[in-house]
Image (spheres, rainbow, N blue to C red):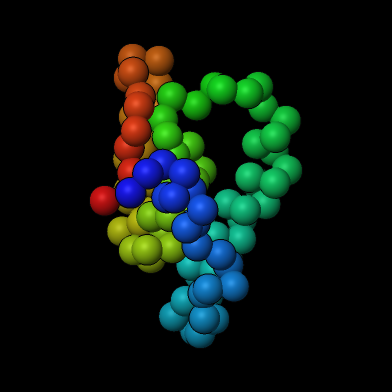
Length: 93
């Protein structure tokens, strides 16, 4: 699958069916989207070492695996996002 095809298949908040069990996932995904739409555009361009960006990775991981496992993957990714890591293509497993 090409990088462009992967980008166009990013899940939407509308794809989450809201129930008592998925409500925490919905809230966290909503907060990530707020960050992506408000704070992220104000940051300098091309500062992310990875593709997809850390916020895209967190969104995809939490959407796919839920708050606990997806959150763990997102935190692990944020820890790796530092000047000592060269980055590169790192999709959600």
